[in-house]
Image 1 (cartoon, rainbow, N blue to C red):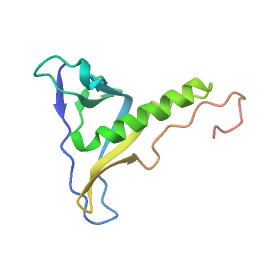
Image 2: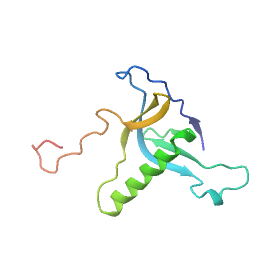
Image 3: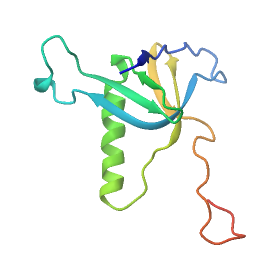
Image 4: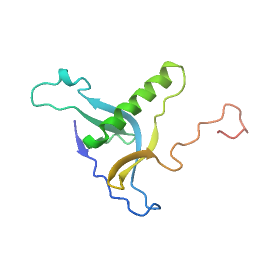
Length: 118
């Protein structure tokens, strides 16, 4: 996989924005720890809408697993996927974060012409 590791920017003032990525999917490489070949590790990565693959730092493994679980639950109940979406990554108060970016998702097209999408 042609990927690069996400460098989390340190975000000190609250009004400063971290790195925002347009995400098409969150994935886990070797999701079952017992199934990984010797010397190959489990890690999370995101597939961006432009085709770029970005490996996440291990500090965001739990976020990736929780995001996948939420998306699977939504899809299982017939609700739309959370992807594509915009996620802001960074470090604030000494801890990594991944949150929906402001204005993170483009509105879905309206089913009724002339009625604004919500």
